[in-house]
Picture 1: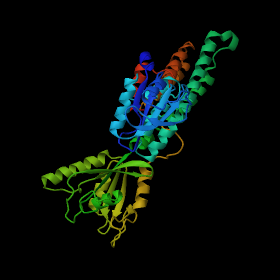
Picture 2 (picture 1 turned 90 degrees about the vertical axis):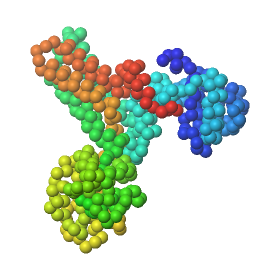
Picture 3 (picture 1 turned 45 degrees about the vertical axis):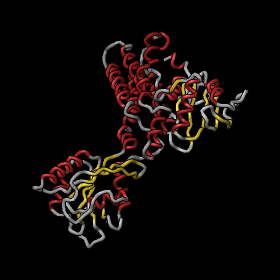
Picture 4 (picture 1 turned 45 degrees about the horizontal axis):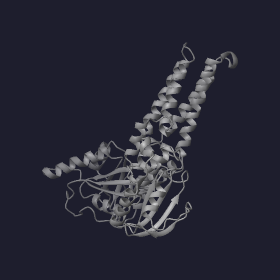
Length: 435
């Protein structure tokens, strides 16, 4: 890794094919490479001042230099802006490689930023979250991570653990000066620390919703207007709608954004007993979709009412569920759930609000943990619980230090202080090239 860090790397940092593309060169030879490929490179470089000129591969554009220690990676860096054609970007990257750079690997710019101390691992993961965000919730969580909000929270917990460890070690090594360990006081401190780890772990479910989204299955009897509602929520004619029962034979999947989160809607075949082989397969898939969804919308025909069959089907749904009375624009009977009309679109906003309230998350300024962090927090928590149990037993005080060190290591792996090189490589391996 050390040899690779001494090399100068290059890669496009924007998608190819737009009107403008950016190519980044970073490393100890960045200025030398820029001088070789950019005809108007100044004799005296002024960092953060863009220069217009021509490139050796035949395009023209801008060169923006950054000094070592003041760039994204922490290395000497130049960012070129050229026309976004594939030919221009490829030609510039090739020219930079001929001048001494090599192609950057996945996430290598951000990994260098981490290794140079420009960010920790959670902030680096925030960069990836921002790049991959498909919803407002994911975008905001990426920003909070990138700003170091989660880093600060984890660091505070780790500092508390290290403080407890220092207390144990001081009472063990310097008992004559500081006195014996007050186990009751230490136990109360550890209880507070365990509470903080629990609060962090408590954001895991909300994190999945913010980053991955939720699956909402639309189920009900034939001709309840499921496909019409599905199309209305999408604001597009995606599902075939007819008056013939059993038109929908297979599940349809589409994605919308509501309440700042990603929502995957699944339109399903009508629930009924049927001798039609194909339709029966569709009904089976409908039940599977209902059993796997984060939320089930049970749609019934409000003009026909919520009958015994609807009641029985609604009752057997094991997942979180909401009743939806469709066709409310027609004369209808009173029944459970939100009244909507897929035809007039009345009630759709209220329905989406209820859906978001049922499975959504409060997208505020509190950072959520990522899946990588969960087992590390659990490991830290288990170690702290073991220490509390140790304090209640007639054993030497210094045994408590073992669990405290284990907890500190696990927490340090979240932010990177104790992460091994192979862990770091694995994290950045899944980044895109150019980040």
